Image (cartoon, rainbow, N blue to C red):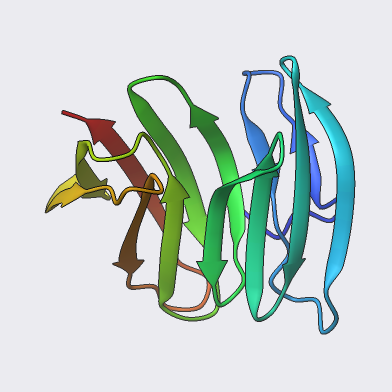
Length: 137
């Protein structure tokens, strides 16, 4: 897989691809329509951020490329790549417990804060892709 050169793309399988961690300067694309929602992506080597209807859906530090991103009421799934380890923040339901799996390995349970955010790390080597699955318990 590789960076998403169009910054955000809707796939035929009902998922989104977004992010380009190879950019030296912050680049953004606003008002991307997908399944009745509006998305905005900001991305470059230091950060990748996906907003859905004005709220932060996904954020990684440093920047990343995300493939097959799907968010439902019960879970969020995607594949992610970058040049280094990532710190990922996702918007979920406030004060709920979530199970986080990376490459099918359960890394534990995380309780979301009052603002509905969870954060976790993903260890990556350049060119490596990790599968992430977050499930509400």
